[in-house]
Image (cartoon, rainbow, N blue to C red; front, side):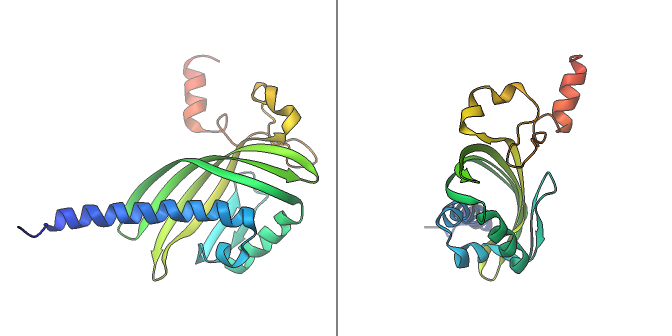
Length: 185
């Protein structure tokens, strides 16, 4: 039997890398919900960035990222983060970008809340495996569960803070804006 060529080996390596990145994304959700702090820290590269589209969150490096999580956990009770769709695009053998769609059910300031989430990610292969190089979180909505039935009818769908804020997507996306303008809406 002939030895598989470099093309097949490269394709298998790419599939293995994609599987490892999917595991990284899954571990993030489980470890955040379980407050497995050492495991969460291990998910990030030494110079990683964790931030939010609304600018409230912005931390560089594992120490700052973990301090930021401590602040988040101070107002959060139990939660359940579920990731649904993961799009991974490889830049090269050691770098990839990703978009992850998910939702969360959680307690925040003693209130049951639901959130639709998107992460814009950059992943880097390190000596310890694939890690987050950057993770940017955005919200379609983040609301008390009683507000959920009609939340998509309004633009200020982020109710995680004292005053509601505009949702991060889709209305802020260039593709959404261009479509709406093209259709004169």
